[in-house]
Image (cartoon, rainbow, N blue to C red; front, side, top):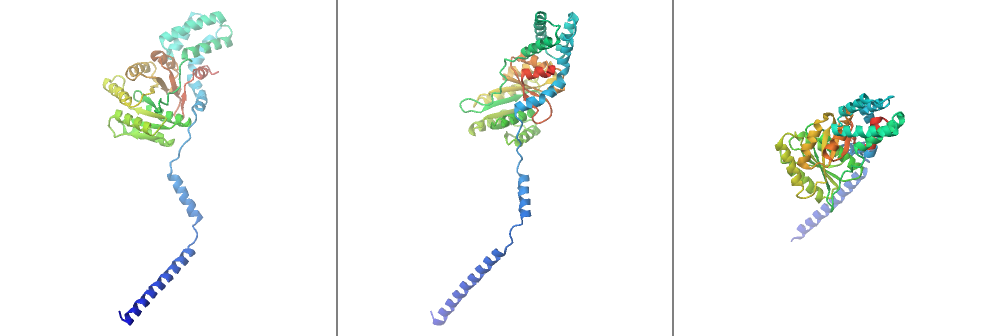
Length: 366
């Protein structure tokens, strides 16, 4: 290589190095001159992120819900309790008065046999203890009503399973009783008790049902397992329980499609949902949702559903919309299973665990 070429190469290298130094200095100076972030802009970004994040609600604890709803129940059921008190408050209880008591109980959907047994017991006690004292008569009435409502039933919800498995709660009922809303409200109650919950949208006939259930879950941070519209509901129930087992959830709540109890095919399908789920884990609860305003028709529904899926508990919805509070007594006598929850309004936490004493005290407004 000639001297002149070597000199050229060295000079070129020196120039490249100098250019690199100059560019580095300029970049460093420019970065130092950048203005600090605008605090208003930063705050605006934080607000946008907060708006995009889902808002998780803290549901009301079930016991607080029961206390809050007692006044509403007292107002709506007053015709039964106050009607009985008005008759017992008379100076003389003749046969006509006892017939009125019987009519009042039957009109409230208590049922024929429970009504006859109740009247016989009440007459005996008042004859022995005296019916002239209104305070005493009211105390006797309260005591006998509590007995007939059934204080000895176990009304707890079996929301956890054995051997580390989740509790599996299957919710069933006819169309329009409020099953999906009930599932959402039970999920809220369990979250309030710090339980981990997974929802299974096994009502695959209506896309709106799965959407509604998912919305209920999102409000309290609960996930929903769903399938394609028109898909096999048993498969959705199976997948929900399987995921609940794999991920260690406390409870899996499975919503099913509303079905008429007179449709044998639909009832058979409901039985299949339960059988398929039980291939991997026991169903710990089958809750039958009944619209309290349907009265005695609800007993027919209860009987058929119980034959298909072995109902373990009743949820009475819309109890605030009827004076027929006796359905509580009648349905328990019909199935031999307890009313575990009552729905008393349109609010998200308007589902309360059923308590016989609270119920009777609300009837009598005591």
